[in-house]
Image (cartoon, rainbow, N blue to C red; front, top):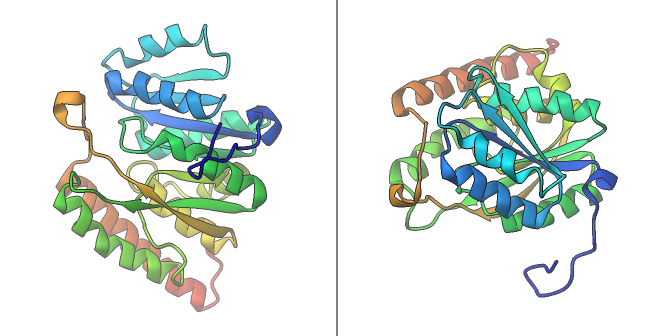
Amino acid sequence: MRNRRGGRRPALKALDSGRLVLLPSYNSGPLLARTVGQALEQWPTVWAVVDGSTDDSAAALEAMTAEHPGLRVISLAWNQGKGGAVLHAMGIALDAGFSHVLVMDADGQHPPDRIPEFMECSILHPEAMILGLPQFGDDAPLERVYGRHVGNFFAWVETGGTVRDSLFGFRLYPIAPSLKAMNTTRHGRRYDFDTELAVRLVWAGTHAIQRPVPVFYPPTTQGGISHFAYWRDNLLLAKTHARLCLLGIARLLGFRIL
């Protein structure tokens, strides 16, 4: 395995490192199997959480498990949202002896070839969360590029300038601190997950390392799909930042925040 400069990367066993790749998926169609296959080319342990999908996208993955012993498919009976699906899998991973998960989208937006870089960084800095900073191309919807600036500003305020992007889902989290942070709140189970978790981890003292990562938006002709509902989910994120700002003020005043 080679890095971007052409040098050979050190061979890493996923179980030895305690790290796995986790893909939450809801009706991702054929992109799910393709993304999982690409992730397996970069890292031997990949889990997919099929979050109440109704498109039979899990069927192709079940067939892949015979050839890839590191692939695990977790099927949820009903849709729990991204945060709910990730936290469910985190609990299973912790019980299985894993310490960190790299979460990435199942719809082809995130580049699998950045997986080794994030894993190696985490091995060097096991106490940290590794946050991707999205690098948008010409294919990015303008409402996505400019609309997130508001959320990024509030995340910057809530974390004292630590978190520079509030939403990007290509992130590597330490499992135990993440579960501890999220088990104290009922929030952060849907698209607000990455915002909620990153802010709470910073509040808990988790160091953040941020790395640039390109973002791709597959066209609909290639199976590109988004379940982000503009008004519904932006309202959810607005409520999330309002609540986190109030909690942040309470922290500054000396109140204990769970």
